[in-house]
Amino acid sequence: MTWLLPLLLFSLPVYAVSFLACRRANLPVTLAALAVALLLWLADVQSLLPGLTRSTMSTTWTASLVGLCLGNVIVLLARRRKGSR
Image (cartoon, rainbow, N blue to C red; front, top):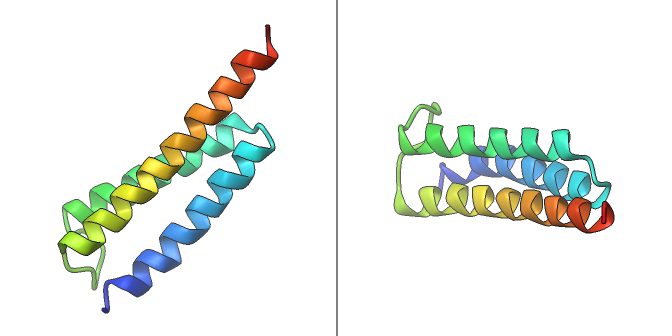
């Protein structure tokens, strides 16, 4: 359970920023949140975060964070494309 605290400290704010930026149609902030999520996922996969042991649960957690941020980017791009027509 020690792997859960660092993931919560990093993951939940990243997803919250991604979600709020998507709602406000702020593409650079949403892309930045996606980049942070990808870096967190890579650090988890490579076990670069101190105190974070690589486990299936933590990898699944960070991969789902990347998926949620990526989904927000796709929704934001779809809204922008629909709005420009």
